[in-house]
Image (cartoon, rainbow, N blue to C red; front, side, top):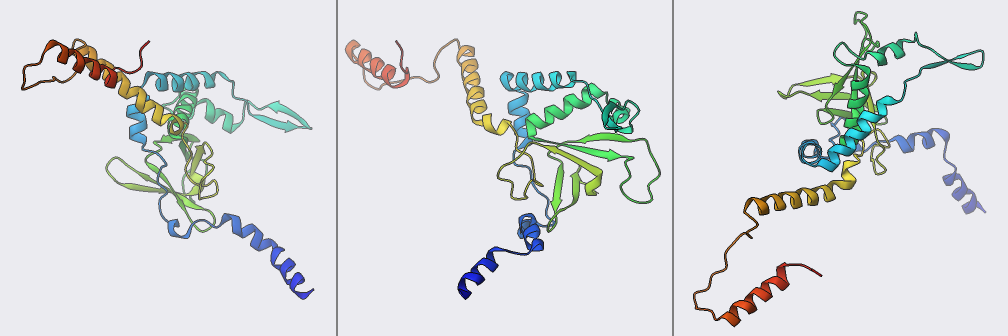
Length: 255
């Protein structure tokens, strides 16, 4: 009976231990920048910029989603009512002096579908002490330039790496990290987002290669690349046999 009681006690852990266990992030990556799951430049150049199907799909989503009207509601005596004077509503209508509401939402969906995540830098929302009050503004950071930094059980913040290699740190409450879920995230949902492009990257590469092959083929007046030579003088029957063999090997299945 004593062995059974000890076994049950081991199964019933304390509340603090149960809370702590799932949120202990990998030790070897604490205080280290979390790298993106994808090669953003490759996805942007070879996928979005070169493949018409990928470009059309992302543009369709990005330009259609902003058609839905943004609504901020508040609870008034148990009923939800639209709050058009809300500070958040006003910010979303004009996120910053250079971006309209439509472009703001369009860019969010473009980043999400291309990189699986989108980073928004908050200005004037509070943050570090001693900052003078400013109008609330939201700015984008390219996904491949913003890096979450994990601690033991939470994010320590973010680091933005500029074009010149300079690094700018941000506190967790100064950045909004929008992302698609990554089921294999070792950071328990605090890591990078999983890009939809990852699921079709292989097919996109094949499509791009086929397009380039056809372009080169017709640019060469439909003449196959290469020339078959023989040191010996071939008879007509031998030439026909070689042609038939090449056709069987390289022509594919034709009916």
